[in-house]
Length: 286
Length: 280
Image (cartoon, rainbow over all chains, first blue to last red; front, side, top):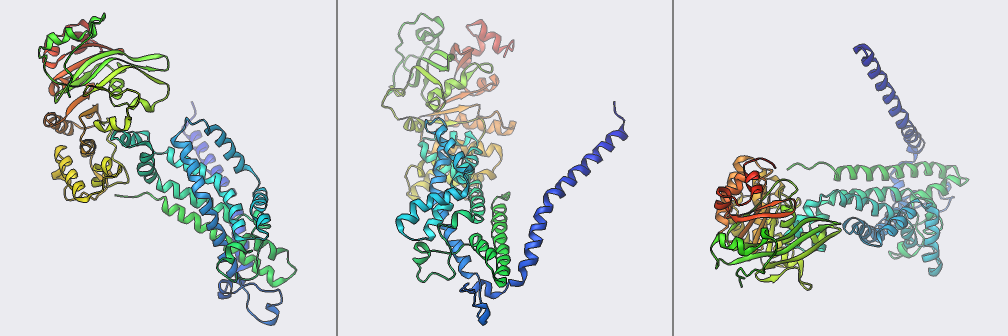
């Protein structure tokens, strides 16, 4: 029988240990955030959001440079990826959750998990073979396809999870009033799990936004805005992670600083996605 | 339309209908629903075995028995809910208005519209308003005429004795009601599709005594419009609300009789023991 004093002491030691661990985990995040912000804050100005990059000598002749085309390109490629990945991901998730006895399910699960674990650069290679080579040029579309392969397994998994959270009794109630099974799924189960589904999409988006490797040889990059609207889809576009890499390995100091600014923008994208996901998933009060 | 009692001779005295028929007396009472040698097999074990008895039209039939005796299994076999469970097998038949609901070409979705079910735990659809909850069975199969839907909502909520309480807030979420109100909403939802039979699986088990009382009064009024089958583990409730009672034990039908006769002069020892509280 341990004395009260000993128990309190153990309690406090554990508390300190847990707090230390938490600090250990948060510290790298804070260091990265602080370093990137300090290095890149100098390049945060209105030009960043309104000007194209242009050639390296632009800054030397005094003309402004920025990453406006990169920000637009990131939106274009990532939303294209969402449009492609969502129907397939949602469909797979619904299949796994609502028809658990289907013969194809075990195979689908294995393939989903394999795709999830595959290095992103290989997904870029697949998009290259499927889109870039036949088309003959780099394009936003191929970047979208590559990122869709990244998003797909995440969406499938989170959809299955969100749907499985809905209790069987809700489906039963729908079936008991004479609704066919597909109707119960589309009109009762999916609306009930809306929050979970949207959260899953946002998390998949946040993950894909940060992928650079698959975009290096699919959307490739562009120092300028695309000339036509279709050019954003069928021509090379710039995206934040890939541009960050290009700026970082360039030999120009002013481009290095822009690279840090690109890092800040990327962090903003990801953090914003998570904040919106949290907001969507908040507890609703009647 | 109705099938009168015409039973084959059976070796099993417990389910020989001519035996029970003579006890009930009224040969020409119309039968809405009837099971014949109905068995439900889960995997390799019998959930219920060779159950045969009629459910009389516009009457309340109670199914009683201790936990695990098969009364819920029987109820779910009535509206083909077992189609949705794995490894479940049905033997025998169930006749609704004289037609076998387990016949090969019968659509279970239509059967479930004719046999509405209310569950123990009220489950209003979480994302829908009270209005949408009631007409879910109609709107989601294509009926969209606003005037007609309004009429159905009012009728169903009045039938479920909920209209006065919610008529001013039909657009509020279904989940914002109390437990008893939610259960009445579930009943209104089941009634909206105008079923022939209302199957109720322990409808008042999760409710407080006041709500239980309201629902029992509701059943008394509803039986004039729709045939009702109630599963209950509370035999006093069965005595209060039902016209006929079936006593189940270990998957078999032990006794079926009018409620007054069963509760005053039960024919089988097991029935008597259960009713006097010796087991269950």
